[in-house]
Amino acid sequence: MTKLNIAGDSAAGPEPSPPGGDWDIRILRRVGRLEDLPLAKDPVTPIRQVAVVDVETTGIDPLLHQVIDIAYVVLAVDARGEIVDVVRKGQSLCDPGMPIPPRITMLTGLTDEHVKGTAIDLDALQQIFATVDVFIAQNCAFDAGFLRQLLPSTKDAAWACSLRDFDWLKDAGLDGRALGHLLMQIGFFNDGHRALNDVISLIHLLAWRLPSDQTVLGALLANAERETVRLEATGAGFGKRSLLKARGYRWDVAAKVWWIEVTYGELDEERLWLQREITPFGPYPRIRPITWHQRHR
Image (cartoon, rainbow, N blue to C red; front, side):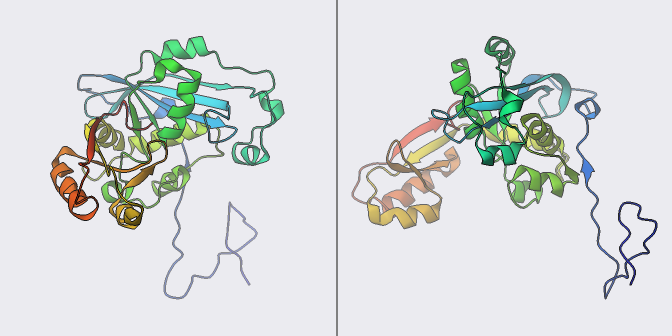
């Protein structure tokens, strides 16, 4: 019986084709270098400084856990969402002062020996981030929370979330939301979950062109920059939780209220539904404007 020829195995013959046709094969390429990114030749002003960031940590709670790896790439981005230049990049390890949990080592490859005696130069990082107009991360509520603990000066920073501010299925035809899975669907792969690897992977996704020829980055920034409204189901009874969840409402543990984010164009319809189905006898739903400075907290 012949074998499938893999990686130049000249001693083996070709695998017989499956019934009904040839083998379907998808080729994945390793992500390229930042230096090889295609850059806009005729940028349209204004040009913004956009920092793509990622943190690796000892856990999920910024108040309890520590950053062990942080990376960023600052891009100059024009008004269309085209990358004009790679301004600067950086990565730093940090000793958390505690053993790295085994699960985190399995995920990142980082051990106690890798981070022993290391520290983040927060003064230098603050100077760099002071020039940034907007930050981007995959599931940025996680990264933004840890960054605020490291640098309180970023507490009012603008954030765009490539997980929540862009619909990968509807707008790009890609299923799933995990960074590595999305990356493979556009033909690339990367190794591990070190912070800089994840930043470079995300930049490849952001630079990918949609059927409209707009970059994902351009669409993401346009979505994130729009002002929306947080509509709270004030006074909603416990028995209404299934209706609210089915409608897309989320539970705010701290405020103890169900809420949904809608555009101004959707506000009247959503308010009428809430008053009809959830709180017909009041109280009036609470409304609060949201910008990309507050959205991902």
